[in-house]
Length: 99
Image (cartoon, rainbow, N blue to C red; front, top):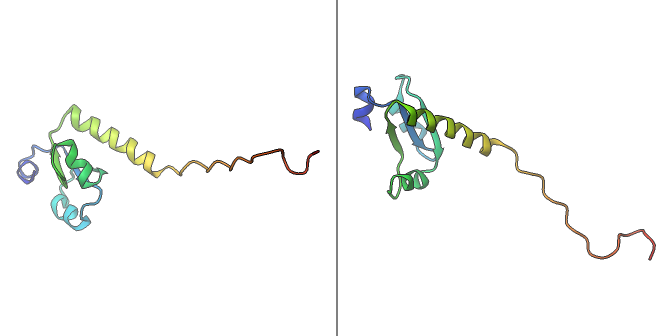
């Protein structure tokens, strides 16, 4: 991953959402890389058949663009407020009505 970033082969850096912010800043610095952090390390690793992954470099191209779009969608879903809780259902006739 570091070699790809240094040689210009990386078009996108996918990082674990539970990774270290300090490590992220150290790796990316002021290089201007596009970075997304859509999943925690365990889930990100599962995508690649590993126990966990914290940093993944993706080559420029359609895959990198698609990952950016989908990561933005996922971030929008997680930022959305939870749906309102359903009111508990009452059993029996409504109160205050005729018996």
